[in-house]
Image 1 (cartoon, one colour):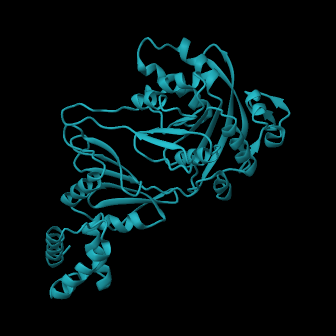
Image 2 (cartoon, helix red, strand yellow; image 1 turned 180 degrees about the vertical axis):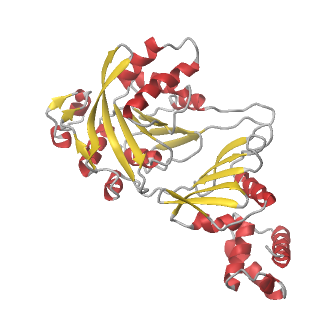
Image 3 (spheres, rainbow, N blue to C red; image 1 turned 120 degrees about the vertical axis):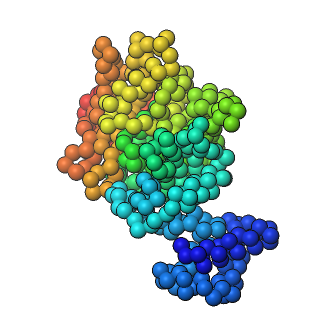
Length: 409
């Protein structure tokens, strides 16, 4: 950025401060101010030779003041799913599940300034004593930052944009993520109050799928969601969203995910949702499920059976007194359905498996059966009924038309 343009930005910032203007809420007035200052400046338009037009220069300066600088066009581009900075001169984006290097170049100071601006609205911080941070941007995008000396030299920044392409199961059917038969079966599972685990790798579409499942729940349900940072966006009229909180500079005030789950159970939920299970909070979720609370969660796993194995492992992180003799039978009895979704090489996202947990255990092995499986480029029914048939019957749901079943799990 040229010195002349930098002087214009400083002049705009001074007028914003003295005029008491809110750059984020009064963007039109801010743009008029930028245009007036540029009209009075003789050097800025000619110095910014890389700017295509005066309007582009106005956009760039406005983004520096009210937005996130050179990253703002990337954030505004609806085709971009994620933005990440490895170093100031190497900024990547993901489109349709594929990464590409951008032409955007920043300085170290600009990266730090952008991160500070992004964190301002969240109340979270990143410093030497706390070199990682997760936060939510005003538009719902998820921000993750890691700084040296955890990283080798430069600040590492990831922005996962909030793009909820499909908020319903019908929307996922239209994009090919699900078949209409599989979508109808999953909606029946939600209506019947089954406990559902959504599994997959990073960027596999877990949050989108879980969001669609929750939006298919009866409108009379009271849903409480617990997340590290806010990501889920429900249409339920009775929904409370909770997120974790970092500790203060004094080391107090931290609210971990385990605490959120315990507090959520005191809020009269009809359905408990944990955005992503990573650690010992899986124990609290299992206890809630075991008490008869319809629940849903997501976790990272490479398949439905791997997800079940992970659900058996994570609760034992809570302490040495939590043993497999308790966890494995509990997982077998309370987890009902596992949905595995994956990001394919062509950038599309497809549900690979819908698996039922039978409740039977042999040794430490939990028996499962695939209700739907991805075969021949399509999610096909496997001709078997899921377990917990009495739940479906209580909701007057006829499974025979949904799974084309001839066998029992």
